[in-house]
Length: 355
Image (cartoon, rainbow, N blue to C red; front, side):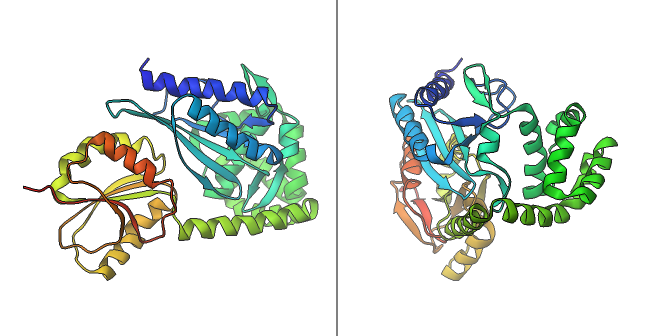
């Protein structure tokens, strides 16, 4: 196994040990079979956990301390109402990268702040798996269905068979949950889809499910719901104003640096990544280009490389040396991501190679 993979695996081992020792209440939500080792069927290492809200600050401190103890770099924390994202990165002396993304969910399972299960309901049913805690099998597959349906209006195929299986194995518990949250009439329609293995058919009821969920959350968790909804919009507005991703511009003469570094840089920023070209020379054109092509990616924490010519006009935060190395660029990207960036600005600019 490569050294950089070993470092990330050791970090995850160490993190679970520390969380257990400090009695932090947490539970891994999904895709935990290979943990604490990196999954073998994916290039990305994405760890989804639910963390008790009262333990959140201590949990974050433990993540940072554990990364420092393992000589790893921490990328800026991305705050959303329902999730705090921290990326931990290993970079060896050759500029080879490995990383793990910690998506730490709080409050409970919800849609836009409207809860269908509180964190206490989830954590009281967690179970020990290997050396770390995971959500119950029932909750895991319930989330794999509802999260994708409510937030994205789709069914993730890799989870489909297990979702249908848990419905059959825990039928009464499943129906009791549906009836409590969505009411008897909608539960009957959803149950009919499940019994015919038509999981995609449940998508047609998404709007009705959301309306029922709103009422359920407001009745059962009134103060928590109002607080969560306000927080949801507050954090989303912040992400629009101060996008957490990275945008780096290169003079078109830097094609070799782009080609050699983009593959490794992609491993740091686990959102969308793309290479674009901007050839215009007015500030208006730049802002139009930024908000149409760049903003949708950096707003979600992704990475954008842009080639440009010497006459282009744009707004950058830091100008680098033209002869920067791949390793230097990686480190500069990480450092630039630790400070707040205003929408419309570029993190880094690598100018023309001098003759």
